[in-house]
Structures are given as structure tokens and as C-alpha cells.
Image 1 (cartoon, helix red, strand yellow):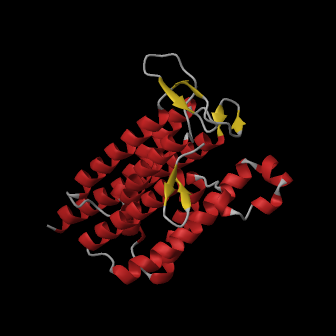
Image 2 (tube, rainbow, N blue to C red):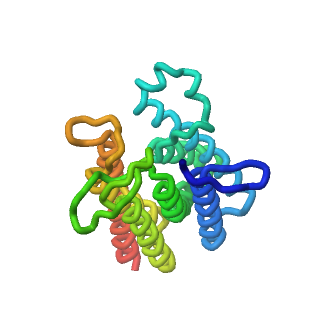
Image 3 (cartoon, rainbow, N blue to C red):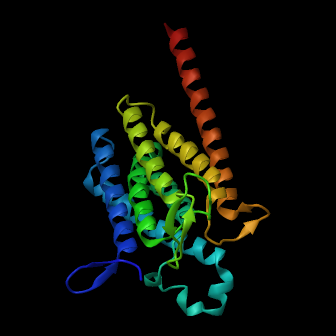
Length: 258
């Protein structure tokens, strides 16, 4: 039996409640960053947040359904039943990022500034979301006998010595959040926070993917999620190299004009 939160009129699964709390924390964090950098006001932020949130929700669901197609092929009526659970972060991230690109082009706002705000929001939201996974037994680690293993339950309530994946993920995103805050205090070029987040989070997720114990689609020894992580790492490297070249060109131009 998974823990629930009593909201007087109904009970909400603790995992769902914590994921919702993570979403709220992420939105607040992103908004405060944009206000601090004087990039967008409340109305513009809410406008963008709504577009990205809807796209991310649909993308996360589509990714989850695709990875579990054998199940949903036999139960097509459950595909649109979001209340039953089943969202994939990578699908949500990709769909949300594409929606943000489209929004920025249509509205003429700075994509990189909104991406930096999203990076901070994702860190705070994921730290809380992974605590929800720990409480629920979701995204559990592999059974292990090393000295770091803890007696943890899986999604089905089976308690065994497991690699403390959820604990490490929580610490990872708290650490990344603090690191990004320290970097943000230096007011770097727009887009730097996003690149650092993308490279750090995707690299860590790829490595930790080998310690995931939950079933998923695999290609050889790798989870499909890890293949997506590799793609995001490459994207981060390309974006980072592009920013470095742009900064270098601006410095050279500045020296030549003086």
C-alpha cells in the first residue's frame, strides 16, 4: 500500500502530491530568476509556462506510452487516462524545450534566458520529485550487496538491499541547484546555466542508468533513456562550444576596436 496525503475531501498519493509540489517549486524558482534578471514579467512568464507545461505533459505521456507499448496496445483506453500515472521526464523535457523554442520565436523573447530559468526550476523540481519516487518506491535501484546498499522497497513493496539510487538523485539535483545558483550570481551570458544543467544532469543520469532496477526497453546493455541522455550530452557540448566561440569572437572584436 503506497502512502497517501489526506486532503479532507479526498486522498492523493504521496508520489503525485510531491510531483505536483516539485512542479510548483520549479515554476516559482524559474519565475523568481526571470524577475531577478528583469527578463519577463508575471504575465509573460505565465503565458510561456502554460505553453511549456501542456507540451511537457503531453510529451511525457507520449514517451511513457511508447516505452510501454505492449501494455497500452492491449489497453488503448488507458492511454488518455493521465490519472492512472505514467509520465516520463525525458519526453517531458524534449517536448517542453521544443515548445519553448516555438514560443520564443513567435513572441520574440529570449529563449536562452527562459532556458536558464528552466534549468534552475528543473533542479528544484527534480530534487522534490525524486523524494516522491523514494516514498513511492518508483525508479528504484538494482538489488545490490555492496556496503552502500540500503533496505529499500521497489514499486511493488518488495524490500531488498538496493543501490540507493533515489537518495543519490536527490543529492545530485540539490547540489546542481546550489551550483547553478552560485553561477547565476555571477550573471553569466544567457544560456550558460542551461548548458551546465544539460551537461551535468544528462551525464549523471547516463551513469546512474546502469544502477536502475526498474524494467524498461533496452537496446543491448543500455536503457533507451540512456540513449536519449547521450543525445542530450552531445547537444550540450555543441551548445557550449557555440557559446565559447561567440564569446571569443566578441572579445576579439572588442580588442580590435580599442
